[in-house]
Image (tube, rainbow, N blue to C red; front, top):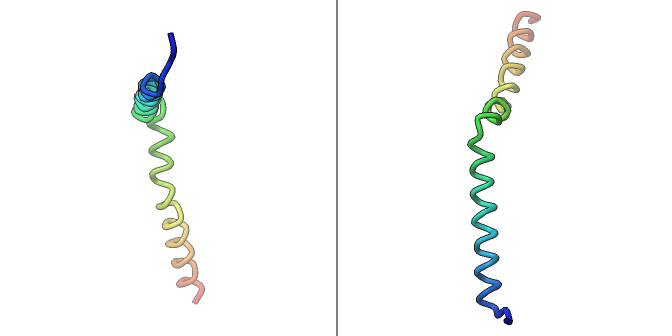
Length: 61
């Protein structure tokens, strides 16, 4: 039995499909929800700091 290019293409397609399904399961896992929510809110953390700095500068004159 010899393998030709079509066998290799089929195997690589199956491996990539398994990897994609694994990635989807990892991304939608409820264990990851808290860390993903924190990462999603990171851009807004600088906004709060900026508002506090602006308010302090306004108070100080």
